[in-house]
Length: 241
Image (cartoon, rainbow, N blue to C red; front, side, top):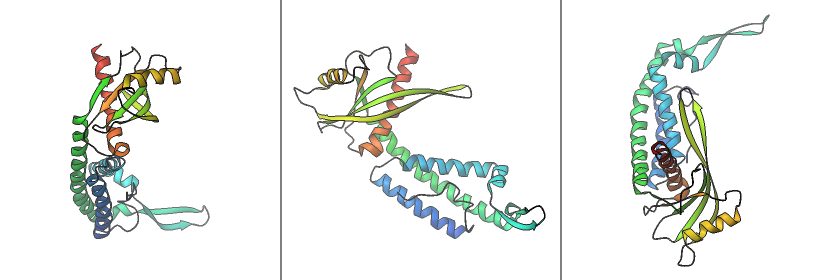
């Protein structure tokens, strides 16, 4: 995936055609990933760039504080540089505004495409607890399967709770630990018992089978969406209990 610097708008040559060239090259790379149904990291990075542009457009002081400066004069005694803010240049500001006017909607269109893929995956997911659900569900296992493929991938998960201002957020960390092929003698239930024997630090683990028949890339798309879906599932369950 092609990268776009976080300060691409004000970095280097500030020219509409040049910035348009940079942006369209980046979006072409993102759209290629979306065409291949690869969501992450392109979707999250594109969202970050989009939010930055919205902040710049809505906050003139933000733009002023983050704009590059050029040296206007120097004091040899104090070795101090006096700067002239480029943001005072009306021609330059007009160029920036033209870039923003072009960039925000085209990035927005890209986001809509990515969100559409995300929603398709999210709607296709089926989350089912394996065995009885314990009271403690902030750590356990995810068994991810995409039928009709019998190959099932096992992830250990840990949910962390962190606070921001007045709100509480739940984040999830996963690590792939094993894979197996489902069969009559090798079921998800027997695999859970095997995990209990192999990892005694989790004697009664929360274990969830997450399935989807959508057939998209697991690492870049299905698993990131499945993680968030499980966090939402557990949050709703905790609020209703």
